[in-house]
Amino acid sequence: MPLDAYHQSDPKPAEHANSFFCDAVTEFLAPMRGKAGIFRYSSAARHFLFWLDQNRTQLSSVNASTVRRFANHACSCPRYSAVQLRDPYYINVVRRFVRFLEDRGDIRRADEVHDINQHLARYADRLTHLGYGSWAHRVLFSAAEHFALWLRVSRLRWADVDDALIERFARHNCCCGLRRKNGKLAVSGLQKRRRGAQRFLSFLREGGMVPACRAIDDSPEVGDTRLIAYRIWLERHCGMTGNTVERYLYEVARWQADLGDDPASYEVTALRNIMLNQPATRSRSSIRLTATVLRSYLRFLAARNECRPELCHAVPSVARRRLSNLPRYVSEATVERIIASCGKATSADLRDRAIILLLARLGLRAGDICRLRFSDIDWANALIRVHGKGRRSANLPLPQDAGDALLAYIEQARPLVAEERIFLRLQAPFTPLASSSQISDILSRVLARGGIEGVPTGAHLFRHSLATRLLRNGAGLETVGTVLRHRSPSTTAIYAKVDVPMLKQIAQPWPGDVSC
Image (cartoon, rainbow, N blue to C red; front, side, top):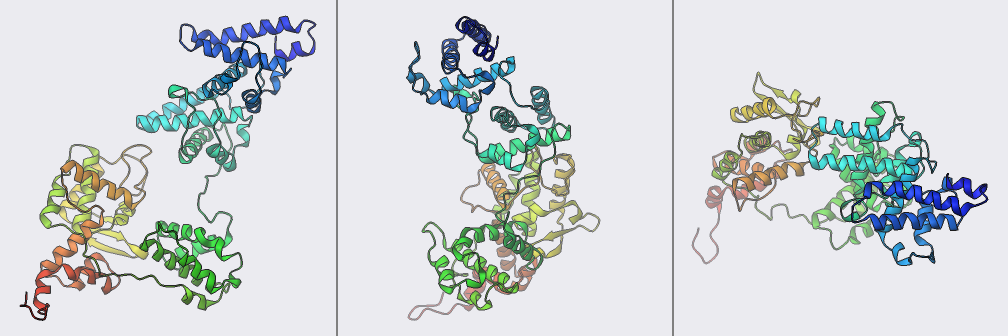
């Protein structure tokens, strides 16, 4: 008999309460028979039911807040101790007992997706079919299971799920009663929770179980019409690529509040304070980025007649010593050693070899590799179209060895997915390489596998090395600038310092010493 009923109508509630306690607890403990934790499970369940009975709390009203009140009550219950309530594992068992009572029908719960456990099982099969590795499979399925449980504990309906609800789930302080290793509550990052919930919802949406939900936009300009307009201005009028636009927007969002809401009231003092009051942890290049973005933002506002145009000149400049350092490069023999260390046995070897050869032979940037698409390859004429900075494109000759490596990757190693970009992750969900840092990570792994030490890191290494080799073989700076697709000759001038034979010819003797 449910606890609600004997509170309202039975003349001998204590007897029925004891009967209900025994039946519910016995059934709850059945799977635990013979296990070491059964005594703690029994104590937690009986303690919770006794507390409900003493407070005359109806089971239909039990929810997450009820469990929190139980955990925080000043315990004077016979045979139980307040020390038990301070044990997270003990309270976690209570949450599991509440879910058991919900499954048994003693506690009414909100409407949910029909047969959610079956849908979770099918979702696990889908992840396996898509080729997710064991770690990614575990993370995504755990987040989906957690999201379903959180909706249930929070008494929320699946029909009400939207972007805001997913964000609430990602940021909630977990008291869902999930059991993990050593009985600890599940703890995961915001991105893992958010991504897991979104992908599980996409799976349910495909089956028509829940209404469609929009993807969450983490961009800083959400809700800010001025930043939205600034994004459009950067993309359409300045020709910036996606990663650069994101860097500019996040930089503006960092100090936009310090300027105020009205651009017409911007003062020179506020602009200079943004530059002068930089955290001590920021590097010189980061401060230089602040100056660049601040000027760009002021030019944008001036173009919209929202601020005075002369404010752009009020931003202090940051010293930049362009030619103070030598380019980081390696010899041609070392480049060939790196290429030779790329094997051909696995899918990762084939992909990495194709990337390294494109970097070494053509001096491409890491971003150029990420943006490379099938439509950019002209196999008949051995040409490759590269989309560089400022959305400037150029056709380059495709060397034989780089073309062979690229074709081997496409035919033997690339996952069969409907994606236009060429280079993909080798594990599900087989998305394109997202950033230049992933290209640098590939180079680091190649160097580690080949046992090559003392080599500078970063994909730009090959670009510097190619320019250095061209100069030392007699090519002029104009030729190097053309190969590297530099917009300004001053950008290529840094490589003049590595042409040692030419420098010896023009070097003047030091006063009082012989010429070198």
